[in-house]
Length: 306
Image (cartoon, rainbow, N blue to C red; front, side, top):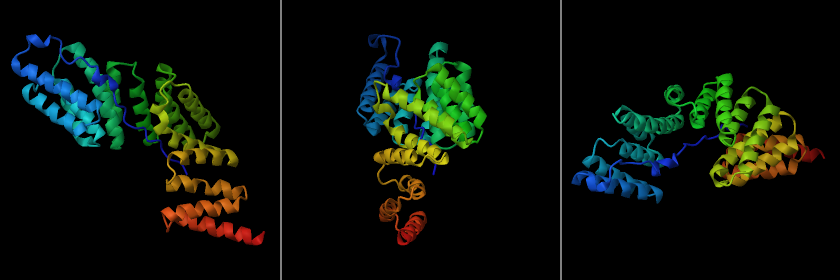
């Protein structure tokens, strides 16, 4: 009935603003000038979402200037978009091992550790996520993404109290950081603190509704509404559960499990015809879905007795 939110990878938009060179281009040797041009073209292709092309130009830039850390970092970010996660992790490790001016090294290391921890979450390497976030938190305690990613990893390891502590730290740093409210709500659900979980989901919705960039949170609304529905169902608030499941389904109409979640509250409310209709929709998508088959059978029996 419950989905973990896909706390998707945090793309660091500042990669496009990161100052790649400290000197004026006129002062560069010829190879470095050309390398800079390749790097800038790679950045443009990333902005245009042409990731393969971006990687091609970052490779050219690296060939001419193999000591430039930001090229490896940006290439890693492009690989994330292509879902080449293992390659991205390898490049982020390269960035972290390279020497650089201390202040610049710290700044890029923080961005790299955020991205690396997000990729490791995708790969479900949760212990490594925690190690990565701890390295980042040794450099700065002011980055909510590090606390959020660490919270996600702890949640997946069933270390619920620690997860909540990290989500709280993320929220303390940025009260508008809606993902931390969602993660905290998910954790409270697993602790069977359903009312508290609902409160956190509502806070996330409030932040999103008041955000000037609502589009950034839309991809999280499916999981949020579904998980809120699960908490409402656990409290016996069936009408509200159905309403939230329906909101989730608006984002993914053909998601089998999301549709199946409605079967229980509909049945509990005696809305047997809707149980049948929902089951039929599921069976169109998955003819062997046992949950839908059983629910339809039970609903038909109830209707025969009416």
